[in-house]
Length: 191
Image (cartoon, rainbow, N blue to C red):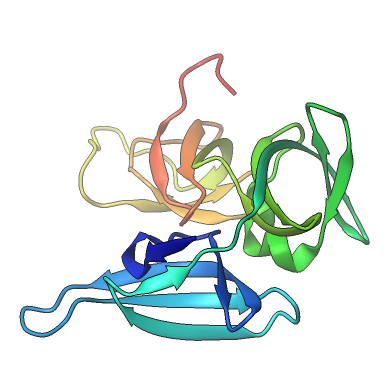
């Protein structure tokens, strides 16, 4: 299926010259003068080689047909990450290089979107937001209010992020899985 280059997003799979590539990042540039372009960083599925392509935003790119379904994360072992299809309880092992640096956000029983091409996992899409606990941050200073300044914090999954000054250790927060940034304080009772 042909799509405009500017519509490609992280996790999409494109077919170039008979080879499949998973999109790692996509960024559109709209200069004041000149033609708008889209810069796509991709990984070739067959051998893991990373490539970058730049297309005009209106250029047509062949998007590969994939079987995309919801799967539940079960566990990690030496072979990769095991997920289960909730409809038929079929399990699939996703190689570590497909999950990549998103592994820090995987949580037991988390529902993700897996894309398979001819039964082989080619990309994974995690929920956009996850709830994590702050295990270490600078103490809150009395009288300090929310401002544009943020302080460093270590999350329960080992990732470092920046949080507003009024957030203390032990607080559960919502984190964006795309860049690890603080979104908001998590509501009590939600997971």
